[in-house]
Amino acid sequence: MATIYKRKYPNGKSVWMLEFTDRHGKRRKKTLGNITKTRAKQVKAMFESKIANDKFDQFLGNSESESIEPVLLPEFKAKVMAQKNFEVKYATIQSYENAFNKLIDFFPNDKYTDDFTRSDIIEFRNHLRGQGLAIATVNKIHRTLDAAFQCGVEVIKCMESNPFKKDGNHGKLKQLKEDKKLPPIMPAEHILLFFDSFEVEIPKEFKDYLYFLTMYSTGCRPGELSALRWRDIHFDADIPYVIFRAENTKGKKENPVPLTRELVEGYLMLKNKYGCEGRPFDQIILTDRSRPSKIFKKYTKRAGIDKDSIGLSYTPYWLRHTLGSTSEAPIQDISALYNHSDVKVTQKYSHREKLQTKLRVIERYPSLDELRKKVEKGDQRDGVNKNEREGQ
Image 1: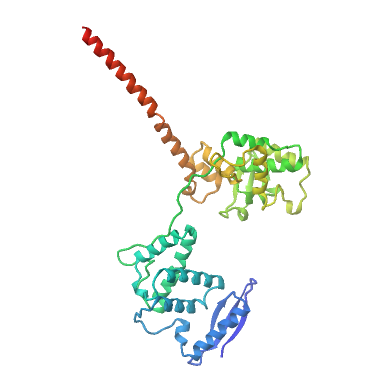
Image 2: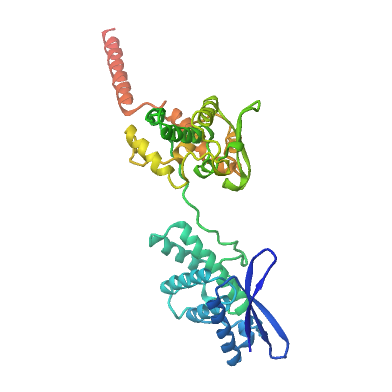
């Protein structure tokens, strides 16, 4: 018989355990993970049914047979799901179910596991993209089936190699990548109209003004700014600066950023005139984390610039991208300001500069009208020279 119980660790975490006696009379344990009690009971029932059907080794994944026995795709799915049911969380099981369903819908049911080739996988991924699935979704299905096929190689022994992994003369099948896009920026006239739309005499609008001015001047993210505290701003340093704490940054690294004179004066006014110090946990609550986009839209509509020239709606992130794209500083300095883990992440801001350089070269080409005028002018000169020669 098998029993289940909850094991608690000193750090407060707990996992469900399955304890049972094997066929040799030895008491063994198996970790089920952080699952619900209902799920643990289901695992126990499935385990006991496996033992009753004399499939003990298949349940534990300890098959002694090393021979490769290809199976049909639906049968392969059933074996993988039986194996994963005791290893992963319920949400991950749903991911396996979804990935296998899409694979079975695309390939015939009489296809064996060892018949899959890399070209089949590539064709399957192109089919998913043709259905309109996002690249991130296709890559998730790719990773899920990669793990499933690896299980077929190492545990179930129904194929010799995983078409997702290195095999023979082929390298690993790479996942798809998003097309590179230029980061959107706001034109200078729109930035001025946006900041002129605030009525800074009103305390609430002054806070909003300071919030978006900080984004524009430092390139910080909305979440980093919403968690700002007074102790993070150092007014008395030789160069006044603000520290965005590691727990609030995307890369989990502390990021000190210098403040402009306008920002220093704004925060001092907020602190002294409006009395914002003394809030819970010393927070400078300029605006709520869930509200920046709505507030930003409010002021862009007031300024009459809620969309750019091609109809894209402005968002707060455009202020961050505008600083990185229009700054004439070296790309390494912009990467340090944005706290990027690798300068390659910042390279997208240099693409616009490269395009501008190429544009200056292209603009030197004569347009069709200029070329037409030049040709006509040349014909007139040729006619004058011809008449002069005939008169001589």
